Length: 184
Image (cartoon, rainbow, N blue to C red; front, side, top):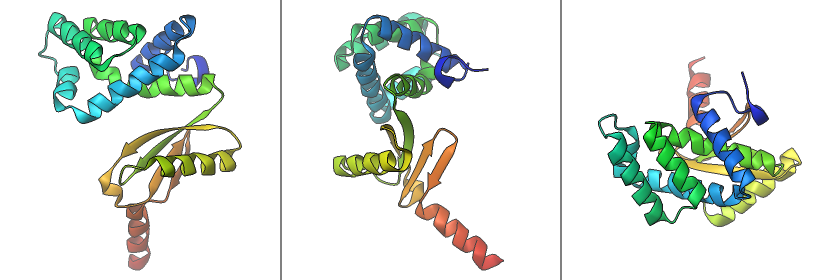
């Protein structure tokens, strides 16, 4: 079962779609996307924030007050701030990482872009990101937005996922293939 633009009818997909529709109606798609990127970065960098969104022990009122204070501190737009309050009230903060990814996909599709999930062993430089986007654009014939993440277990190289297509140039995969070939 799918909803608009191919986002699965998961809980996080429904929340992302609702946020996207609010942002579209308010002509704030890019502002919400930027705020969600700020939230994603804060989640990556803050153990306390990750604990807050994952903890079933934190009460609704406390979670709501805390997440709204964090939203203010991060300078998030009003739509995203309100949305985080709703998530806290509904005890759905744990869905936040998946909602951010789904929203990014919706915003990219709205702009006519493809979204590539790129995992690298080390953070990419701005120049590397520009080069990667250019290579993907040439390969796919369309603009490509990249959603970056880091996984040191890759050892080196990249894993790029675009929809159901995957390009795996990681050293880990190459070593595993070499080990398998040596056994056989």
